[in-house]
Amino acid sequence: MSEHNVELAGLTGGEMQLITAAADVRRRTLQFRHESQQLMAAQDQPTPELAAAHQDHLQLLNWVSTGKVDLAELGLSADKAESLGDKAQDLETRAPNLAAWDYARLAYWKQVNSEDYSESLDRARKMVAQAKDIPKTTPAAFLPDALILGIEQRETRDRTLPALEKVAATAS
Image (cartoon, rainbow, N blue to C red):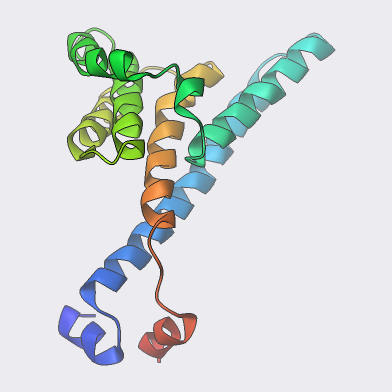
């Protein structure tokens, strides 16, 4: 459907972008939860204590992916946030998975503090893509993905979707 037809149906291009972004975040959240649960199910859990620890890690990943985590829980302060970009840049070629985590934490800190976080978020995404061949064998390996999802959840959560009737009118 062209942008012109969308506007005739009552939705603006911005509303369509928001609907698409919200749907993409929802799809990727479900995919993320599925992948992290598969990891937990695949791991040997020889003791009840280890099984409980794995369940706690899964809950942490899900909490981080909501975008409702506190900065202190991520070990972030203004002083630490300033150095994250340099640290991440140093890690890009040697450990892109760790660079992704630092860039994602920096982006989250900037987002919470109403600063422009787009460059840090883009770099975090790039590092996640670059680290795709590094096996995710522990819950910690999913933290950059979870935090990126959390940032995107906050982006879409803070915006209002068009009314359901308006969206339904475009389908008819």
